[in-house]
Image (cartoon, rainbow, N blue to C red; front, side, top):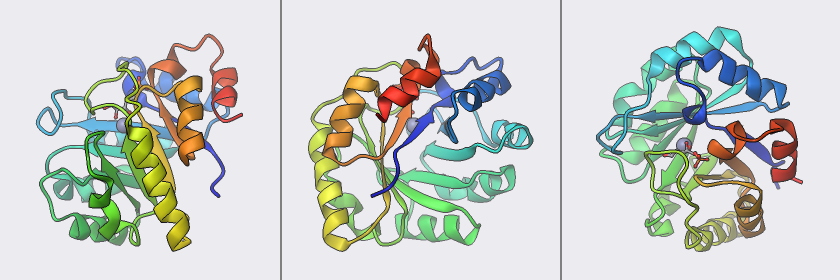
Length: 216
Ligand code: DX5
Ligand code: ZN
């Protein structure tokens, strides 16, 4: 069983002060930063790119958990590796050869994750489970922070958790979108161990207490 990790999403921080957002994650005693990269094509929103990762890299030791919500993730592996990302998670729904992309991410010294949208058949990621160390079950349709949690995804989380147990694997099971203490608990009960949280974290009056409650 993986130790629970809370990964605040930079998307929910002030985009005019990313360094401040990073500091608030560190001050909450956390070790992961979730970095949402959006191309305005795979998702109907544009966020930021490798340069933000590169500029934040020297400022922090946080683990950069980069979530590529882009149509052609294979084209940006080198750029994010050079920028200092430790991990790239790519969508099974994107326009690429998933197995080749995962191999290329690892060849660039990063760890690889596979993500699926809330309406995906979770069986779509089965062919990749032996080559990733994180599965991301989106609990909102990707593109924007502040959306409501989609409870039907709990079934996919349970399915992936059962498959992990059956294989004796130990990849992380990450959830992302509308995660707060209440929805986080439901996901934990379903088998999730890695919790992306944007709005709930950055709007929390006491972020450290919120993060502790999320994994209590
Ligand atoms: C949505 C992103 C999520 C989002 C989470 O497309 O992938 O990481 O920023 O934000 P909240 O926690 O506000 O739903
Ligand atoms: Zn994300």
